[in-house]
Length: 231
Length: 122
Image 1 (tube, chains in turn purple, blue):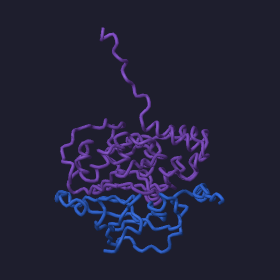
Image 2: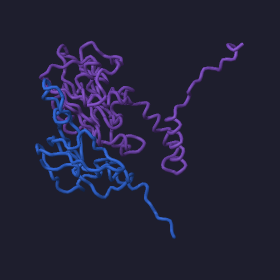
Image 3: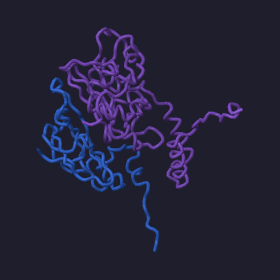
Image 4: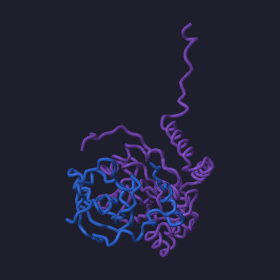
């Protein structure tokens, strides 16, 4: 008899954070900070974003030294050439508090490898890279990358020689970052389209390097902690 | 008593079409530090809000770039945009942040941005 009356499996359709978001959103609409239409337009705009423009920016920089110089000096201006207007993107027209308009393009060299993290929260260059992957927002990645960068990169399958400087970029203020990796060997004579294909999101965050033939992100490895939690 | 008037749109009016932090350009005055300067991060109290990571407190660093002008987050969190300050991109040696960082990777670094008020000359 008991088996017949098992409760239906519980499904958490809405998480606590989602309830919180809905509550704050409805308050903001009620107070007139923005309208329901604004919110819908913003949500739809967010869903159109992805890492393709940033990949295109890197491919252009590989092919054109002048453009590379511009990208490193003024990332916001360089973004215009790949169709991303940081300043006038809808709907706020000045960048939201979570998407300030100061893009910095970090240029790797054979002796310097950048990798981006936001230890405080999850700052991410969303206008040019889309929504951040789930692992980028986890405390695991945020805490450990500044402390054990080489171990964390190794978990992503990226093992760097001892003489390469690993520079962790902790995105804590109004700048947003993408990595401009070194152009890999075996891509001589490639077109911009071909080059853009191998610049994956992970390459732009800095946890991977581009390789000919590799056009997708690896699944994020999940391993139990091996280091003590104290320093 | 009359209801105080508060302009909730002052930031929108200032930043629209210009961008943030671009809209604060030219308001911070002369920067105290220049590229290449050695600085130390002050260990200031942060009762309500800060974006200065605890791991940087008291650590030496080198100024890599003067990135932009903006109110410090401790002020901006309360919508106080009166005191605009320079922001510096700083490079820390990993070894200075974590004393037991492996010697084999002596050249590894962390780069992050802090407002002027958190820095003192070294």
